[in-house]
Every structure is written in C-alpha cells, then in structure tokens.
Length: 344
Ligand code: SAH
Image 1 (cartoon, protein in one colour):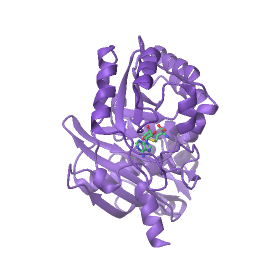
Image 2 (cartoon, rainbow, N blue to C red; image 1 turned 60 degrees about the vertical axis):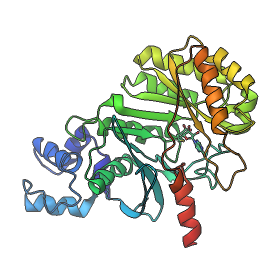
Image 3 (cartoon, helix red, strand yellow; image 1 turned 180 degrees about the vertical axis):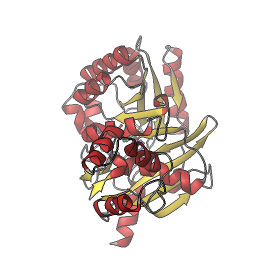
C-alpha cells in the first residue's frame, strides 16, 4: 500500500499523473491530507468516485490510534501512547508554554544509540518511523486537544540523524505552506551528535533549530554516558555545530542532563565554560529523569542552581528547563516500556 501522508506534492503529482489524472488533482489530494486532515477518501468530495475508489485500493492515509493518554496534575502536560499499524507503539508529549503549545515527537520505535540514562534505547531499535507517522503524532494531538500546536521538537524516542531521510521529509512536509504550515523556526531537531548528519542538515538550508545532546564537557565523561561519544569527539561535534551555525545562521542549543556526581561538578562546569566560551549558542540544563532500568540519579535542585550560576557568571547563555510531566513518565521511552511490560 502507498503511504500518501508521507508524499510531497511533486511526488503526488507524479503518482496521479501515472493514474491519468490532471496535475491540479495532486494539489487537491495533498490539501485534503496535509491541511484538512482527511483520514479516508470518502469525504474527498471534489474527486471523482472512481478516483476515490482507486486511491482507496492502492493507498492508505496514516492515522495513529491513541492507546493511552496521561495528563500531569502538576502542569497539564499530556503524554500520548500511539499505536502504529504494525502493532508497535510510540509516545509523544503535549506541553503548554506561554509562547504556545509544543509537541515532542518520536522519530523511531526504540533507538540504537545506547545512551546510559535513556529508557528508549533499553531494547535497541525496532524500526524507523515514516514521515507520515511523525506528522500524524502532531495531527492527532491537535485533534484530541482541539488546540493548535506551534512548536515541534524531535526529542522523543529515537535518533533523528539515524532516520535522516524520513526526518527531512517530515520537516519539509510540516512546514509546507499548503500543509500544516508550521514555521521552520519553531521546529527543533535534537541529536546525540552524529557528525555527518549535522553537516548534511546544515546543507539543507532549513531554518530549523539544532539541539545537541552534549551532557558532558570532556570526552571521557561523555563516553561514560553516551556510546556515540566514542565515535565522535566533543571537538568534532562542536565543530559540526559551528558549521551548522555558519551555514544556517541558527544558534545551536546544547542539552545538558545533570547526573548527580557524574557531570554536575564544579570542575565539569568549568570545562563546559571553556568549551562553549565564544560560541553562539544556549545551554539547556535539566536534571536527569531517573529511569528504572538505569542507576543514575538526578542532581539536587541546589546543585542544578549552582551549576547554572557558574555558567552564567562566565557569560554562557543558560536556562534550567522546566521539567514537564515528571509524574507521568515524561522522559523518552518510559511510557512505552511501562505499557509493554504491563501487556506482556
Ligand atoms: N536522540 C536524540 C533525541 C531524543 S532524546 C538526542 O539524543 O538528542 C531527547 C533528549 O532527552 C536528549 O537530550 C536526551 O539525551 C535526553 N534524555 C533522554 N533520557 C533522559 C532522561 N532520563 N533524563 C533526562 N534527559 C534525557
């Protein structure tokens, strides 16, 4: 079956041309799916019955099932577990901020990067998500909440650079003026630091934000937390981020999850300052969210504040990320694991 939600307009033109349809037909179908969010062909009233039947027999429109929704009593954050057509499931998070609603989506089922503090990677990678499956996480959440989403972050389960082509396709589709029309400036791709992926993305000339999961200021500590750090040194990764900034003019955010006693010391902060001094960017601190499968503990609030102040005093742009949805397994991969463990 052909996956229409993942198709760009030119691809749809080509497909419909093969079916003997005029060119404008593709625009109509694209709009039905990407803008009017149709999930079946029946309602596509400006298409002939014959074409609707033909499409119905050859194609499908991605339409995720909501398996569970949990809402945080603290901040109203909603965490969704979506069922995919092959029986797999992925999670997404809906957050309300004063600047608008934000959705955090997954890019893969599972992950093979192996970060030591992360729940998504415990069972490795199951498969990549299609662009349509990424888009539909946002569409379903808008439909379920009845609210517009203005920001999308690719910070759920999975490594976006490990599913590069589908992620790029998603970024183009969601920012398409004839589709959901989200501003590229409100899209963030987070990576554990796959250098060739960062350099490739820099060449796409998109206006999206790149977030680098740094989590340590020296290679040895970073390697303890993130196996990918054995492949690419901090120096190489930060150089790639500089290239990203030069090519796109977009400042990079550096994610730093604080793990008690591992990367939250005064010494680590001093190293981080040396590393980032003079770079155009922004550090997001977040105490690591403890995951049952992992032994790491989060830094105490006072330590987080001390770390932040040390950076700030030395001229580094830094914010402590508000922790959203702590009471609902807010961290990547936690909900999916709980659900699977319960159903197995
Ligand atoms: N693979 C990508 C995107 C998904 S993870 C990446 O590595 O950036 C999104 C962010 O959440 C990353 O910064 C990741 O390191 C962080 N993260 C994962 N598990 C976490 C946990 N238990 N506590 C805090 N941050 C976590």
